[in-house]
Picture 1 (spheres, rainbow, N blue to C red):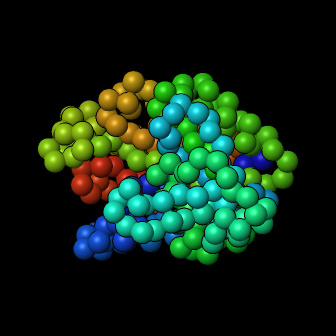
Picture 2: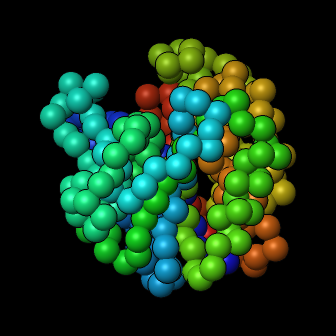
Picture 3: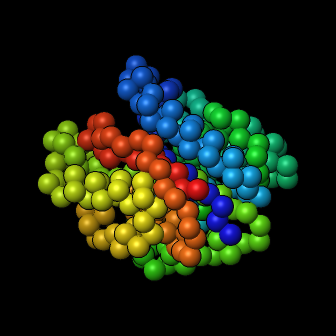
Length: 243
């Protein structure tokens, strides 16, 4: 059963070494993510599943201790999913593909807060995965025995300003406003109904992870709380909790 969920943005700029001199600009977002992880810990989960955007449609499963890196962003920072190192995963072998950057940010957030509350694994889902398939992935997660918590990573549109990665698109602000409202209200139906094509055009990496959350939360009575909503750099970032 789904006990709680935390929704966090996942730009590599959350990692101060990547952001460098601009790091203070996302201090509020980092604080909101820390608060969100605190809600997950308070739910006393038996396991934590980290869901984030991936390059392929997926779902792609990543084990406890899987490695991620920010070397592609010019900094010598490695992270391990739910562990301090590959050996710290407890199985001595975290082989396989490296974490996509969204899940790597999730691993960094967990490491930053010293997560030790439950074993961790990850699932990557990409923009090509249909809403129906995302919901099915979420239902499968929620059907696992015991109490499951979700850390759901993803960004809203990247088209909020002229200097945004996707340039200015007038559809971006209304899309992001509905995403923020739905995540803050734990509105499963609204998340499930997000337009896949529009999300792709607006470069919203969170669409598929959010629809996994919607599937996992079907039939629950979780209440939502919006912790953070802003669009620095022209990209929509949202942090929320469901508990």
